[in-house]
Length: 329
Image (tube, rainbow, N blue to C red; front, top):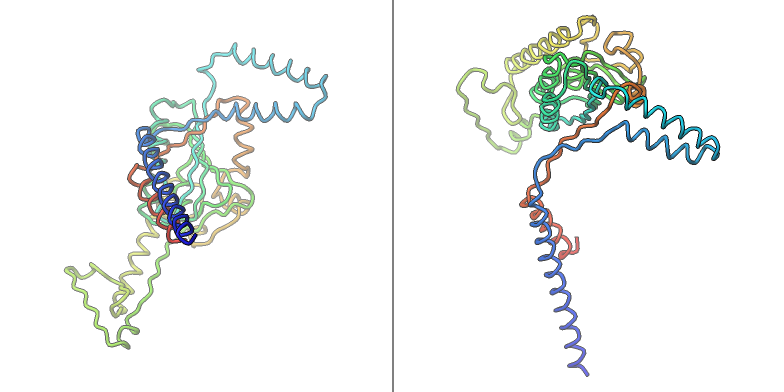
């Protein structure tokens, strides 16, 4: 009897391990097969169709049968008139969604989206960028602003819509636009430069730990985390920040001549209504209202660049999950 119990436990363990291995091998094969389709592509969505579907679904439930038939008849007539119009004469609006982090890492997708659109858009069209960012690195957002400037250079209408926040580097990008729209309580501004760094010199000294740093060039390194900072180091670092701030102010002024740069470049931020009074934005309206109104006279397309993860990245992630499952974490 004891033998049967031990055999049963052994068999259960064996089957468990075998099932895990079969599952793992099957998953790897599935990922490899899927990897053949990995790569880069543009996801294109027709916003007009989205609005029409939403309207149809809602009317079908809200209206009675008689009213709904009447509505369908009118919609059919409107469609006929639209079809009569020459399609290439209708304005096209391309919508991009930009959510920025500290490194402005999504600029890499933005540049691909803009490149694709510029191959077909002309000066009758418009590009709307729904931007959300609290700012980040100067070089990252500087590149983002340069990507948006490509649109202006092609003389295509550029509108930046801010529903939540466009501050610091986010506003650096927004100010390139021909038109900036914002929600009434969107956060706008913060035209300033910030840098902060901890210093562990006193702690290391207390623990009798030496820190050595060798540089060539008087200002190769100014403030440091581990060495002793001097007043000269601080002054040079502040000088660099002031120069960056000056460049930021020049950039905003060059792109939005209507602002009083001395009044708005204090590092402060304002909500949409106050930002409108300071000429930081041109109109108070959400991106939803702007696009739904434009849909009457334009064909609207949402463009999104997507990059699938490489198979190696998927396998590493999958392997880590398997190890965590076995360890019971």
